[in-house]
Image (cartoon, rainbow, N blue to C red; front, side):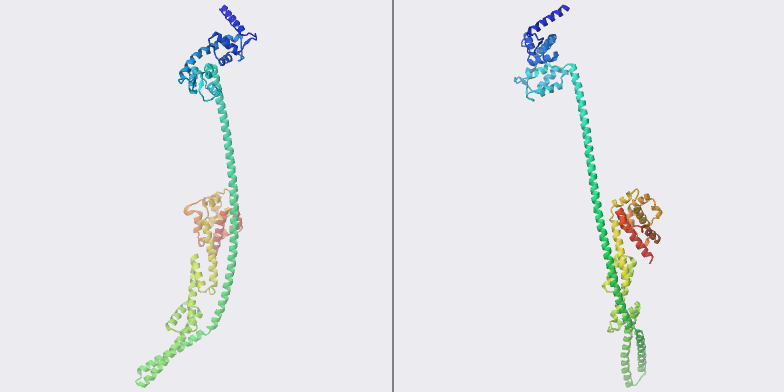
Length: 534
């Protein structure tokens, strides 16, 4: 065996030196191709030679003497494999174009390489093609078909694929993390932008509300000033009317100064005439003389006329006495008798008496309306007074009714404001965990007027529970249904004391909702005290 090995080595050395004519100690790919072609008929293509050198030789571009045996074996492997591959290729080339499709070429490579088929090598082959996607010639694919990867290469490739997969996963995770960070950043920016917009909107809303409140306050003050001026003007007008009425009353007193005496004198004369008439009637009944009867009848006719005159005078002055005394029942009786007697109203006493009755009726209606405290009834009664010109006669009642009407309208307006109060505003009051003292005080007063004990509202949580009630016990409904005359005087006075140190502007600066309840409370306190101290 040693001799055979020595002989083989000598033969290879001889062959090597035979083709290494320049004696440089290595063979080029072309020299190797010529050498192999001299051994095997036709040999293999130059790309196959390069592939063989690259597979077996260390330099990858030339072959030294010690590598010649392995190189020739590799080239033989390729040579004989190509024989079979040519036949396989021709079987796939049914159209005899010396080319096959990429799908057929892939199938052929998988059939040749078997379990060692490398997707990466195939993808590299596709990328290296001069015309990607075109048909594949045998010369183009032969080297790739013969380069069957070994197990180590496949393992390495799989390891590379795993590393690449891991790398892809890592990059994907990084991209996802970057995307998540970007999403978080965008989310933060959106939230910051939203918060900024909300703050701007809140600031804008606050500015708008502040301006609205300032405008409302300005209008309220203007309205109060206008109302005050109107009240003063009305008072002055009523005062003048009162003075004028007082002057007329004095004139009437002077005019009717002696009416009682005249009435009594008329009554006496009427009685005398009536008695005289009765005597004449009796005399007439017993008298037998015809001429004497005629005289009695003539005298009776004269007495009747006199009686009628005295009766009319008595009725006329009886009406004057009733006007002077301003007695309703005497007026009603005298008016009825005056109309029944069909007396001419020369002194306009009948008209004056009937006007007095209307005045009494207007006063009664006004008192009833003030007792009922209904806006509609008050307006109707005041309208009647103004329509018939009784403002001077009923000046004090009109003034009191007007003041009451102003308060009732104000209370009605406040009730409407509470009715229109948004639930969010009530919720805002309830949402305080540590409310400002002014808000706590206003709500304490509110519930004090609604019938709760002051000690019940010392704890803010108790106030929150009361504010949070719904339905029939809701805060808004209780305020709307509250009647000033039902509020105990002691509770009203205590509530007034609690609110004495605050004004509306202070409350409104802290809470618009609390300001509404402040206005309601102050109005109810004023009404309750006014009603119960008269």
